[in-house]
Image 1 (cartoon, helix red, strand yellow):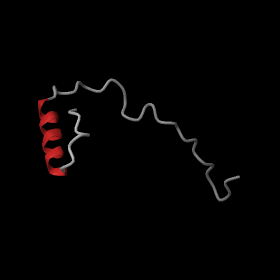
Image 2 (spheres, helix red, strand yellow; image 1 turned 120 degrees about the vertical axis):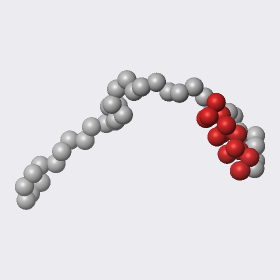
Image 3 (cartoon, helix red, strand yellow; image 1 turned 60 degrees about the vertical axis):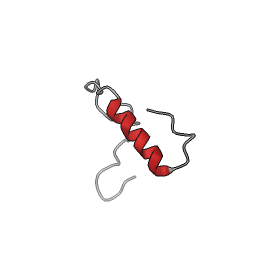
Image 4 (cartoon, one colour; image 1 turned 90 degrees about the vertical axis):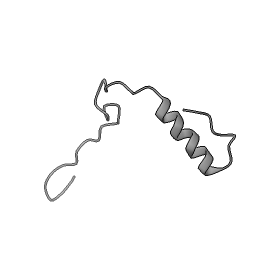
Length: 51
């Protein structure tokens, strides 16, 4: 991605970023699942009381 921190005009910055995205080579296929590094949440107990 192009460094656009020096550009103050929002529309101009978006144009440069869009051009950089178009010029970038395509990303390869995913290696693992998208959320595999997320912290897993333990499921709460079933039933009326959750104690």
